[in-house]
Amino acid sequence: MAHVPDTFISIGELCPDMDIQMSYATIENFTGEVVDGYKSNKAFLARDPAQALCLVQGDAKKRGLTLKIYDSYRPVKAVAFFRTWALKPETNPEIKLRYYPEFSRQELFDQGYIAKQSSHSRGAAVDLSLVDLKTGKELDMGSAFDYFNDLSHTDSPRVSGDQRKNRLVLKELMEARGFKNFEQEWWHYSYKPEPFPTQYFDFDVE
Image (cartoon, rainbow, N blue to C red; front, top):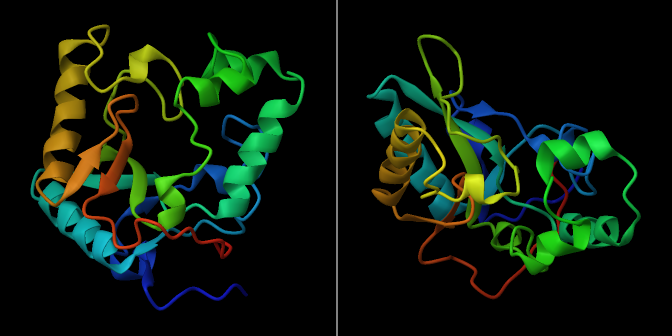
């Protein structure tokens, strides 16, 4: 069992009603593999961002919504896994079409979609969406999580009015509790100020 620093909190334990679906702990992600460091469907954040995210969850529930977490704290070894993956030849055209149809693997770094050092590893970032509590369905955001394309830019003019509205609901909820959106990805938010702005963590998610 990995040692989780006292400064980190399990989101599932703090807010058990969130929908946690950690993409990188499964093969359902842009690499097609379980990513190094992800050994269970658990989500961690540093204490302040975790507590703020629980406040977002409370706000969302008042609107008949719940947060769906795709990724939160990300071990340094996972970021290294992505860098190694990018150097390998393309082997799965179906996955490429699904996640990054316009770019090579290496271009995902060049374009800023994957960071060589990630705020996720500092325990301050979360990738998430919204689910309708009545239907149990994720709101239509106009593109899937980790779809690396300008369609996923938060203010993309290519999405429909309803899709834009859903993105802005998420943005409003998150910004009200101290999170800032990464404009290239509607799902990515970082808590400000970061508790550990210069520190990167590498304990396993388990």
